[in-house]
Length: 301
Image 1 (tube, rainbow, N blue to C red):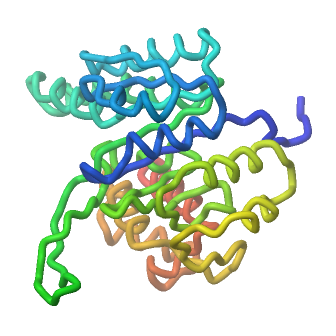
Image 2: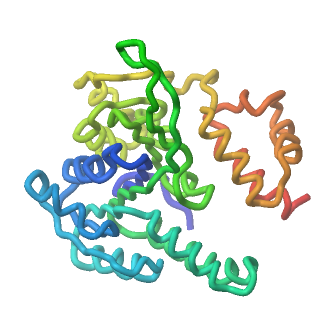
Image 3: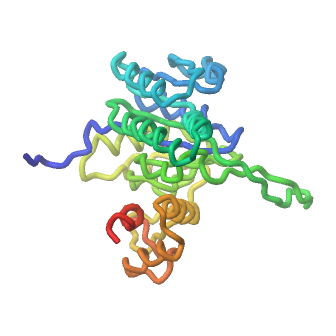
């Protein structure tokens, strides 16, 4: 009935979010090509991935109907056809399709009762597929006013929450956020050697770490980490008990609570039960556990 736990042969499930122009498609293809060939792409941007055909080798399926069922059909086909890595570029189109379907219903409740099962079926298809999957999604775009090198105040485009259901990062092993300078920060990672790191022009180094992570049991990718120097690296506190959740993770936590029917005060009560005086004190190692407790709080009052 039981067997030794192992992550060998595990398939990577990576999500990348970012505002327009942050480099989502290029980054996904760069990581995918260095992860495992051959690569397939589900394109929902009118074939825009084709512009990178001179840089990367991949086959493309262009969707013009963004029903989750069409995504699932393409995912299953990629698995059966023997592709090793699949880029879904992007997943936000399915979310827009779901919102439109809800709007067609007489009531929002009736609409979501029809759409939620399709949404879950797509997520489960991604999770269970025996293939590496890198999914991109758009971020909601906002502008921040910053001073340029010449001292003038200029607007700078930033991405905030991904255009998807609020708990989408919970569904992937690894979740990275791209900024306008093409730097990716991993706000959620089950691969500890990527957690809280920031990379500039991400590609092969990330693929190498991921390949090592899924192929070696009870061993960290220290040897790979030491072989490259990313241009931008935040302090890495691996397994440090003082490492706490990021602001973006806290925003998503409260969004998940609202989706589960909890007020912010009720969510804080759940957090207090974990022994934290403030939500900002939640440790990274306990984040998923807190999220799960919030999701089930209404079920088990």
